[in-house]
Image (tube, rainbow, N blue to C red; front, side):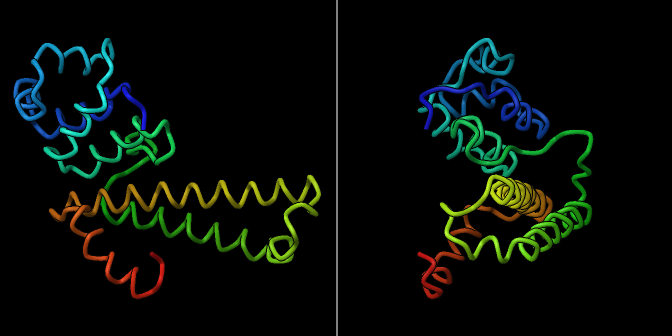
Length: 174
């Protein structure tokens, strides 16, 4: 985890929820001026402040955005671009499309994936990379769909994950 990160997008999510800089500052035990500087990008959010914020603010899109910033972009961002309609049915439709693309590439690569990785040609590795990119799209869209649905229907992603852990243990995933 990074020691500090630019958290402008994450803080904008809180502001869009109606939180004031003063309220954010009180929750994460920093000054309103510090929140202002972090909100404009003139100051990075420190790791301890991020940890406090993740305990205080449970908005799933905020959590995604903060984790994205502090994981050095190793987790998906909170999608907010004009190409995303965050309505729950739209998100599910996009997720279904991304899942279908992974399935298509998986079927196309079944023979390639059965080979030893070190024996693949450059062209086969390019196809594997395309599959991985499609899986990445699906991973990011699944995280954003989960965040959107949880936010819309007032569920805690943290609690949903906690509820699934016993099931994942039964399935020997953990």
